[in-house]
Length: 113
Image (tube, rainbow, N blue to C red):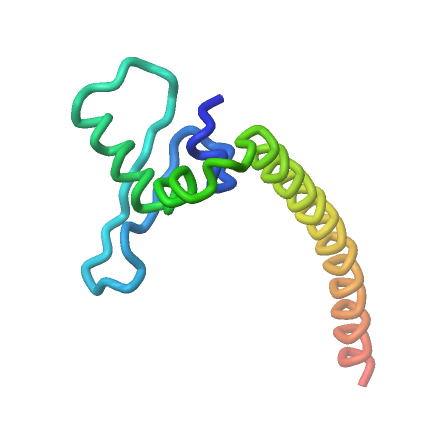
C-alpha cells in the first residue's frame, strides 16, 4: 500500500482533494496512487500533492521523527475512528427504532381523539 496517502490519514489509493479552500476558483484534483510506472505528468502531480498537503514541510522539518512510528500512530487513529463510526451506526439504528415506535404511538393517539 502506498504510504503518501496514509501520511494524510487516507487509506484509499484513488481520491480527490480541493486544491485551495481559500480561493474562489478552487479546483478538485484527482489523485491515483495505485502502484504502477508513472509518467512525467503523473510524477509532477505527485510532487504537487506532496506540496499541497504539507508533506513537503513534514519531510523537511520532521526528518528526525520515525516515519514508521508516525504511520503507526495514524493507523491507530484511523482504527479508533472506524470503531467510533461503527458504534455510531449501531446507535443510529437503535434510536431510529425507538423514534419509529414513538411516532406510531403518537399516530394511534391522534386517531383515538
